[in-house]
Image (cartoon, rainbow, N blue to C red):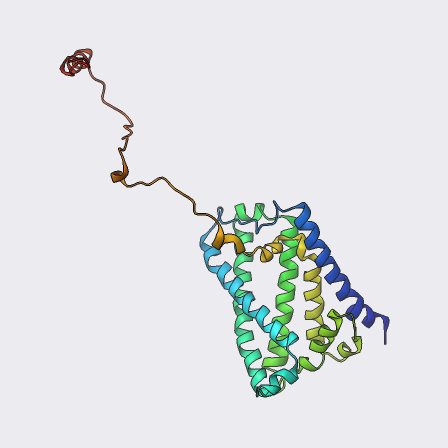
Length: 261
C-alpha cells in the first residue's frame, strides 16, 4: 500500500483527533473568556434570525445522520428488520433535506457577513478560515450524497461496508487503511475535509458548540424591582416645570401649613 494512503487514512485522522482533544483542553484552561460564539447580532439581526436557525437545525440533523451511519453497523439495522433499501431511503432523502437547509443557512450567514460592513469588520482571521473549512466540509458531503446516493446507483454507495468500519476501528487504534482504498473520491474528499475541520475546531468560534446551557435549569432566579404602582409609592420624575414668578412661590409657601400648627 502506498505511503500516502497510510498517511491519509491513519496518520492524518489521528493527528486531527489529537489536535482536537488537546486544543479543546488548552482552550478551556487558557481562554474561557473567549469561549463564545462571538455573536454579531448587535450589528444585524434580520438576516441572522433567518439564517442561523436554518443552518443550526440543518447541522443538527446532518450530525445525527452521520452518527447513525458511522456508528451503527449494518448487522444491527438488519437484526431489527430494516432492510438495506429502507435504510438507504431513510439516510438519503432526509439527509439531503438537512444538507440543503444547512447550505442555505450557511449561505445566508456568509452573505450577511460579507455585505454588512459592521459584521465584516467584526470578522477575525480565524472566522474566515473557519468559514472556508466549514463550507468545504458541508459542500463535499452534500456533493457526495447527491452524486452517489441520490442520483447514483439504485442503492447508492454502501459506505457501511468501508467507511463506517474503517472509522470505528480507527477510533480504537486498530487502523485498516485498506478499507478506504476503493472508496469513491467524493467520499474521500469529504472525509479529508471533515478531519481538517476537526483539527482546527478548538481554535475557532466553533468551540461554542460544546457550551450547552446545562446549569440554566438550576441557576437561581433573578429578582427584579416590580413596576406595579400598587406595590408602593412611585416618585414621578418631571422633566421640566414652568418658571413661576417669585410672588407665586411666596403665595404657595404661605398656603402650606407650618409643621408645628
